[in-house]
Structure formats: structure tokens, C-alpha cells
Length: 303
Image (cartoon, rainbow, N blue to C red):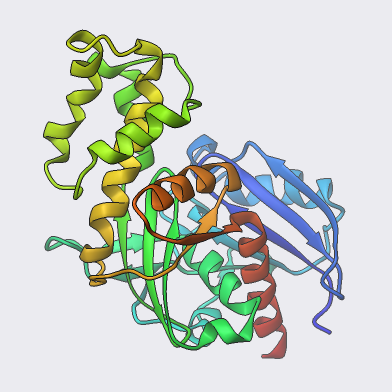
């Protein structure tokens, strides 16, 4: 038994927190609108002490935090670990949170980028290690893992190590294109047929800047309903990501892909995979994050 603890996945817009009993059961959970983008410089420590800990009755419990709280926008910058990295190396790099002797912050990961700049991530690696921790068999062999989101991450895992990863700004591109410029729309992504048409239009993922204009031309030049634009655009962007990113990861012919993230978003990715004749399975990102934080707490308790 490693004892009860407070687990926090602290991202850009919000914090997901769980009070976990010694037997692994979740006694309480809560989401707070206290993401690092909403905090003043130096405010994280007081918010954690005055808002998050009391709300879950965890004033005196050890705590493990992951995500953007370890960035230069968060509580304190925690150094990146270089890939390849395994769970043991990752847990050994937990960083003490200044001002709270019982709180520890997970590092992020850094790997070679597609340009001269490296690629980085914070938070998704904890989900990957959490997914691995849920089944010992996953620690053997090779896995391609996609974590959809504002900045989607694709990771190659070999024998329990995150070997390399690639970031795709698909979610942010969708937000910008659908809110500004000629493709802006108030429609929701809710039209499966239009989504599939967009995924088909993605082709091999190349020439995305040219393919994107079809989201406008099909409306003004071919009388497609404007209400379909958001769904078509989403399918086009996700389809291009699925078509192009695995090869950037060094995977020529991806087998079954693991999707870890918000279930409803993962379902759209799953449909795009299936439309391209590829297989994938969906795992809840919150549960993966909690499993990863629990593994970090257990490793910390053994030291």
C-alpha cells in the first residue's frame, strides 16, 4: 500500500483532480477552471493550497501533478527528459513543488523534431505510461499511440519506452480556421457524412494548404450546404493527420493504433481511421492520466 494521495492533471485551461484512497479507489474528483493560461505569474502554489486541496479534503495528503503545471507558464519549470524514456526513468525525475513539501510535479518529454527545433510534450506522456501500467502485456512489443487534442501527439512505444513522438496542431488549426477567415462557421461537427467526405479529401495528407480551400469551394462553387463546413473541415484535418503523421514517426505501415483522449473526440478519430481502412481502439484519457499519476505516486512511495 502506498497510501492515499491527491492526483492532478493540470493543463492549459483546467485542472482535473482526484482524491485516491490507499486501495486505488477514487473517493472524490473535481475539475477546476484554473489552467495555467488563467493564472497570474506565481499564483499556482496559492491556488493549489487554497482552492484545490481544501475542495477535495486533501490538505495533508501527498500530491502528484502532471501537465503544463510543470512548464514555464505553471508552478515551476521542470526539466524535460530526452527520449527514449521508460516509466522508471520518468518517475525518478519527479520534481518537488516549491512551497509544498508534499507535492511533486512530473517532467515533460523532449525528442527530435521535424526541423532543427526539438518536439516537446507535457501531460500526454503520463497518459501513455498510465495506459502501459494498466496491463503488463502492453510493456512488450511496439505500439503506435495517438493522443488527440489541441496539439495531438503521436508516440511510438517500444518495450515500454516512449522512443519518439510527433506533434500535430490539428485541434488548434480547426479552431483558428473555423473562427477566423473565409472558412469561419458557427456550425457544429455533427454531420458524419460530411466528415467522411472531408476525410476522403485529405488524400495522402500532402498539400494540406491547397486541400483546405475545398472547404470553401465546395460551398460557393458546388452548392454544398454551408452547415456542413465544420464537419467537412474536421474530417479533412483529422484525415490528413492520420494519413501523414505515422510516416513522420517512422512508421511506414501502422498496425492497430491506440487512441487515448477525450472519448467523444477519439470517436471522430476512430471513424476517420475506419474510413481509411485502418484499425484503432479508444481509451479514456482521464483514466489513463489517473493510472499514470497513481504509478508515479507508488514509485515515489517506494523510494
